[in-house]
Length: 136
Image 1 (cartoon, rainbow, N blue to C red):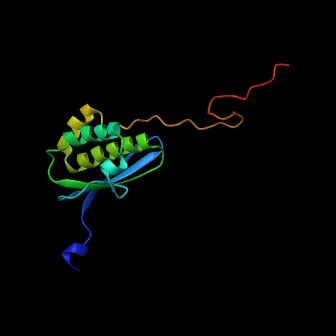
Image 2 (cartoon, helix red, strand yellow):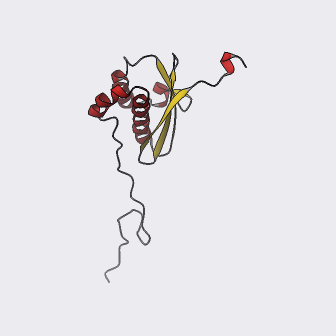
Image 3 (cartoon, rainbow, N blue to C red):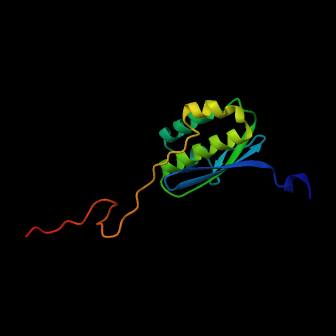
């Protein structure tokens, strides 16, 4: 087996938000960072989403030569973005622990615990909205 067929070593971490779960793999070297097989700016097309992701990546610019492969599933696009950012922050902290205070101060390490409330039995359509009863 030659060098190109050998599996590369990587550091991994998970990030979550609402129903979205992201799994990041951090590789040493130079290469494109991908989300579900697409480049980050192709997967997150909105300027607002790209700006949020760029804010995190600016903090990590001087952290050596790394690239990532990220897989994300579930929920909506904004929750997926937050889960991806959470996984990126966690994987960098696993590789370079001295970044933790900087990332914590910027708010990227803390997981947002808010999740959608489940629908209860006997309710109309939502978690708290009850059925309307006739008055006459």
